[in-house]
Image 1 (tube, helix red, strand yellow):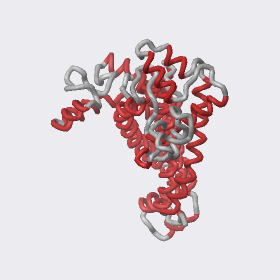
Image 2 (cartoon, helix red, strand yellow; image 1 turned 60 degrees about the vertical axis):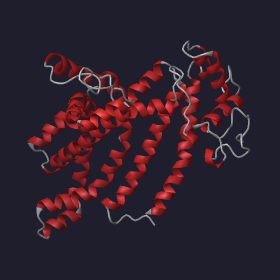
Image 3 (cartoon, one colour; image 1 turned 135 degrees about the vertical axis):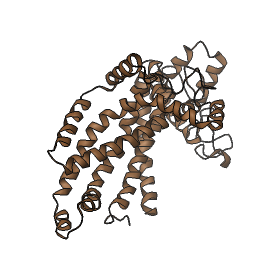
Image 4 (cartoon, rainbow, N blue to C red; image 1 turned 30 degrees about the horizontal axis):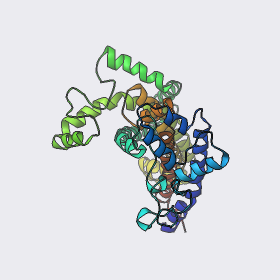
Length: 368
């Protein structure tokens, strides 16, 4: 297993490299360009602009060779200030700083600066990350649990009232656009009934500080119960908006996988041996249907992140999805490339975790 994990991590490196190249080229193909955007920002001084342009190899109207230098500088392989592959210490720039390498580029944890605010991109992402993790984590647990339970019961009770009800609700939810569903929930449960708050992660009137700040976490751990209730009430509508479509689609996927498994010979053999029906369903049918379900759940993580962009925008949540939306609106190239890269790493990681989970779900699978 350890050798397989190491091998898969090594295989993921060229995948992430190609993703970074495509993301970089897509950002450069957008109108304007990082250099032009920096020059148009009135909140950044001319000295700061010149330093940033030099540190990141940014030039006006870049040639193909300049574009290659920009990418290598953003990656951390090229030393833009020195104009070579060597750091100021005379060693390869891609090496860690404590080994004499450079300090610029994503290989060194430097994602550049936001063109709009002038703040480090990694710091902005780190500040917004807790909101997205809480939103996506809560949504994933509820989405996977409800979809699996509903799909299994619908398959076991095929053509029953429950199965037909789940089918009807799934088709209705699957046809609803995410942003429209969010607006409807805001109108009904937020404005008309006033059951749940409709924006933000915390109540700004009662919260000791803005969410995810150091002062907020100090207040949170000092008295966690009211803060947890506050966050939970703010998450109800965004989570429902985010998982409604996913539950609708995945419950049908689970049902299909379970129906295929329930008609296999090993299930009939288990029943012929007199094994209780519950054990037949859970230990035999569901366990063998779990492999395609795991694959689908891992791939849908990317959908959760893309759905978070819409959900966080509709509900004004201070997360990475809203940050990405603001980056697109402001043509914030470094910010967009940083978020795209982190999202790509997440997708590759989820696929790796799904492959590892196969061995636990099915003992016949061995990674030698």
